[in-house]
Amino acid sequence: MKEINLEELWHYFISKIHLLFIITAVILLFGNIYLVFLKTPLYNSYTTLSLINDQNVNSGSISLINSMVPTYRELIKSRNLLSKVVKNLDLNVSVESLSSQIDVVSIESTLMIKISVNNQSASAAKKIADEVGEIFAEEAKEKYALNNIMVIDAAKEATTPYNINIVRQNMIYLMVSLILGFGTIFIMFYFDTSVKDTEIIEDKFNLTVLGTVPRVGDKND
Image 1 (cartoon, one colour):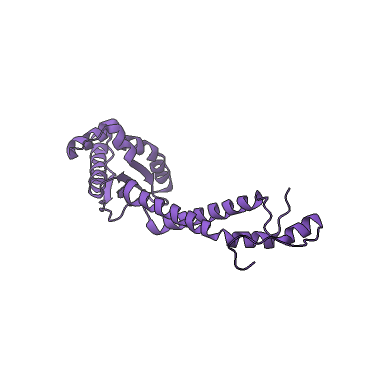
Image 2: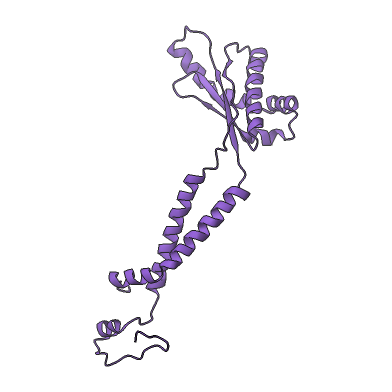
């Protein structure tokens, strides 16, 4: 393995620091072009539903209700329910595609579930979340005699996309560019076999340099 002289490495890095700036500038430029012009912004809205409206709740009923959450999730994402959402909102989307936009989770330490919707349109995400919650509450009562399900919070329209954070992603781009830049310069240094000054010859070959030939046009030699 090649022995690395830290002083040589430092001087080599200083001589190639322009390469680090170029790599950083290129990554930041193309990263921001992707964020602004190519990455599709997605908006998230959610509604919350209570799974019980009876105040006389014991630990047994809580466990039973929590065990029903996976069933509620499947009912919410069922073709029957989502086809009604598509029809009511006149959506130009398939049931399968709509299902992929919806996520249903239980809220920790509560008897509530959250129905989240991700969509390219902030207003569409809000409308879909509200419609899914309302239809589910109605169908749970009519078809399954689940009278305890009710909408607690209506969805709100998001003002910013959840998948784009300019500051955070530029910090990531900066870190990546620095790692790539330092790595590139180190690899160049490691495989660089050229003789850069007379001290290298004297140290590595134990020879005495009697003289040097100046480069043409170099006024300092």
